[in-house]
Length: 213
Ligand code: CDP
Image (tube, helix red, strand yellow):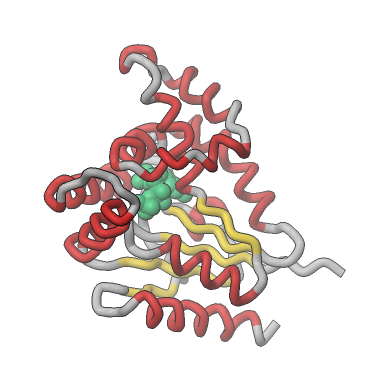
């Protein structure tokens, strides 16, 4: 018998979605997809082109040609790639190309956790559990600054905060699949939580639904 169970975790840049999603997936034995990597991989490829050459058709072709190896590139975590990702993420046709893969992943046997911006609203509107993980821009920027510094990236606090604010604005104001909490999402504000407490809170939300199934 197959078991499908979808957990949708959305939220703004650097809110802790990735860490929480990985922990939830591990604790419940579900597969995990960081959907931001799909947009980052397309964004990364656009950075190799002249800005004038990046038309909708070109961005769509880059999205169609993504391979699993494209998602394991270490350079995907940089601020430049994040900005490029949020620029291609505005293009509805690019989002369309990536939609099917995400939906198929969501219903895989054994359960799945997907994190991103539009999982609970567009990709999996009928997910079993929806959470919206957020925190103040300052707290999120500080966490991302520490994360990138620890990985050896040469970054400054002010630059990381500006990146977070610019992406939040672009992601929230775009017409297609804007960053917004689904009406039925449980909001987890991690501003004053340790990552351990945020994981405990998320696990409780998942357990309350999963154990009742
Ligand atoms: O890790 P962080 O929260 O900083 O970003 P990410 O999840 O890797 O996403 C990078 C960018 O991809 C975002 O700023 C969005 O513009 C875009 N994205 C999206 O539009 N939809 C998703 N489901 C996931 C990411």
